[in-house]
Length: 407
Image 1 (cartoon, rainbow, N blue to C red):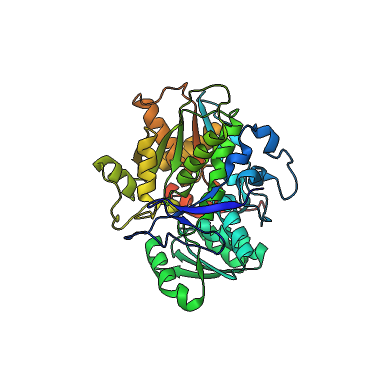
Image 2 (cartoon, rainbow, N blue to C red):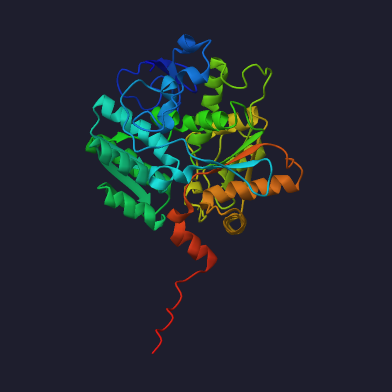
């Protein structure tokens, strides 16, 4: 297991010690400060093959995403069994796989990032963590904080899926529902964290949620035989998963683990997908802008996509462009239609965010951007059952009256 060599600013590239807990870069000459990436001394792994260091054990603390402990911080994990989620091949599209992140603890991909962030919080001796959340990060933080014996303080929009509120309360977190968007929740955390003694564990405002999310990149490459797909579709609210996977691809290439013996290779096109009712990254991509602008009055039933301005927007846009990918938006109607289509024809109950990727995939097949034979990975970032209330409302579905008992 590696030691962390240093933390590197994603913007000014300053090197920061990881001996004490860090948030964003303290050396950036002007705001916004860059997010910090964890860097390791990977030289000791040069010449290895993944089978020599990637754990195969499917039980115990080193299962799941911790199978990649050779490229994660060398500390004891706070784990609930996160990671190594299924890659489900489509029954209708020969080149498509769904990465089923709903199989994680707390039912979403957020388990990965929060497992590692809480692990490091415990390692540093932090006792109070705070997060603004569009829903699923709240449940994940609450669960892992409970497992670690750490206080969790959570701020969520009042209209999040009810499951997110219930689970956070059940895990014993301190929950505040806010009449506003995630940006309003973030403002409240910012205003109160110094006074309350909270460590802010917001997306890209500490280094370790990216490290947890990067394991999705390692997994999808391993599950495809240590080869890249042609494209990865990712539903983008905060975009940490997309950023983490790109970091994983950099590390895989440095290690020589991807497509061994098959040089040259090409990274997948990264397709970032947003809801039409809140699409700041798509607008910036279309305008050729380096960063997004605040999206006013964001509205979509895909709660995780209702992020009016991601903190990592510059990183997201840089990655999409460097990969030769796209940013595109889909409507709520298209999302709902794709939920029902994939449920009835594939047996997969997608989250609204996940269904944004399947809807986008259909569009790019139809316009010829992708061929049916192109290998693509579509991320379903959460279990559809966590959105029962939101999806039922979108469907206009109500509980039917019971059938009367026979006399």
